[in-house]
Image (cartoon, rainbow, N blue to C red):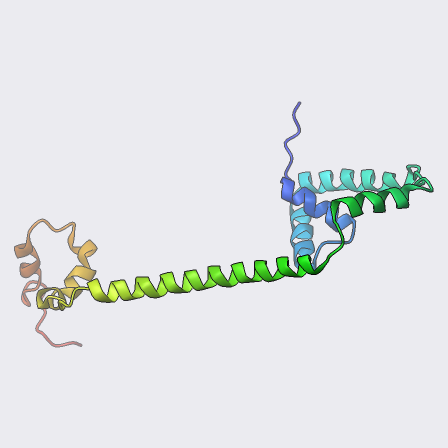
Amino acid sequence: MANHSSLSDEDRENLVAYLDGELDEEAARALETKLNLDPKARTEAEQLHRAWDLLDYLPRPEPSASFTNRTLERVSVLRPTLTANGTGRRWRSWAVGVGWAAAVLLAGAGGFAAVGLFESKETIPQELVRDLRIIENKRLYDPVDDIDFLRQLDAPDLFGDDGHDS
């Protein structure tokens, strides 16, 4: 029978970080709330916690005496020491970033200018301004089939309305 977990992959990652004491307060509170509210998630978390505790009983291998030297040799081959050339790389990456920022700024300014040039200078038709309230409330008028019906409803004698508010 398949076990349908209540914890997502992200929840499991957060749980491992929580058990290791590496989760920030807000995420820890959210995880604790989920565990308090969801029995399936709480059961899965307890199982993971027990497995986590068992890791302390595993034997810890000791590195060989040459481990440090071999590791440093491999790292130094992969990453040569920084020279004046490394400073040039930093300068180049900084210049690329500034170039991109300038390009984005110029594109935005160009777009703004293009809209200003091609924008229509026409004013809003007075007909739309006059009927704005009707346009805004169109959804209320949609069920009405005939405008004359609405005009009849507006007649003061239809409902005994004498035009005075009481």
